[in-house]
Image 1 (cartoon, helix red, strand yellow):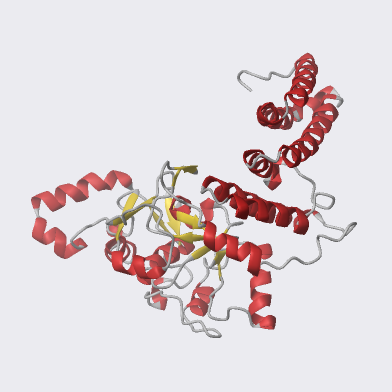
Image 2 (cartoon, one colour):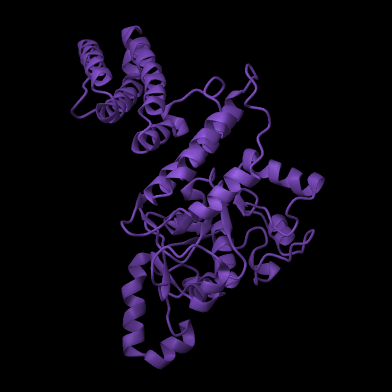
Amino acid sequence: IFTNGDNDTFPLWYNQDVEGVRTDTRVCNLSYLQTDWYIDQMRRPAYDSPSVPISWERIEYCAGTNEYVSIEPGMKEAVLDHYRQHPDEARQQFGEDPFELKNILKYWVRSKNADLHLIPTDTIYMTIDKEAVRRSGMLMATDSIPDKMVISLKGKRALYKGDLMILEMLAQCNWERPIYVAVSVGDDNYINLGDNVITEGLAYRITPFTTTHEGRPIPGVKNFDTEKTYDNVMHRFKFGGIDKPGIYLDETVMRMCYTHRRTMSKLALELMYEGKEKKAEEVLRYTEKMIPSFNVAHNYSSGSLDMARTWASLGNKKEALNIINKMWKNSVQYMKWFCSLEQYRFDAAKHDCLVNFYILEQLASLTEIVDQTTYDKQMKELSLLGNIFEQRGGKLYGDE
């Protein structure tokens, strides 16, 4: 499982070192994967975990070597021309498919020829062993398994040592050893593979399926394993007392609470979409029990809007309205405060103001379905806030 920061790495290390939990799993910190000494560690067995599948010789990743490899998509056409004009020579030099992941790593990235030490494309392909995928136990995102996995490097000028190690692991694992990413790791930290993941709880599983495009769901493609996430949330997650009234939660812990609630509320929403309404309600009630709003306030960042939507879809308007009202009050207070600031501070806060106005519009849209009387009150207040904001020099709809 790939992690990146202290908050998603050290708890896992503690769990393995002290509690002996899942010692068959290798925690791989991407911040350290840029260094040779850490790659050395990954190549050695640890606890009950075999070594990570990295076939490179140490001389190929030691400090000062392969620190980065530039991406040159303009070379792609020249490579294809070489294959058209000299097919036998080209295959001998770069393999059957020059843009296959293993060939990119072998013939270009690891090349001792300085002129070839680059990546001649911004789109890499990896041939899929379909039987290995079927044996893996991963969620089948679509009815058919693709022949090749597409790895897009668009927008990147180079891959760094850690990125190359991720590709090497992916090329070598053949779906027999699952590769996960902690949900708290940003997409930029694992080479655009965020379009090839399926949620299984607080971790994404990397799959050969393209499940999203530029962060947006693809119609008809599953990117959320409700069964595994439900089992993890309801039977395996442990909560450390955040349900106790008055317990102090600092900013860092609060962010992690938001992450948990987002995962759980998304699970409830996905279960509802699948027609599993009883399970969806069970998850919602469990979420409120274990992450209560008196300690972790309902707001947009914590996935509370998904909770309200699910309650509304389940026909429980009272619970939906309860969350909506709390979120509405929170954003209204922020809007009023921003609009009360001195002009130079207000100007700096315009973006935050617009974000909260957008949240209020989203809430009002849901309220219209849930309770017409409350919706009418909201629209009056929204109009008033909009007028105040524009009188201060803000623009609700326009260039801003």
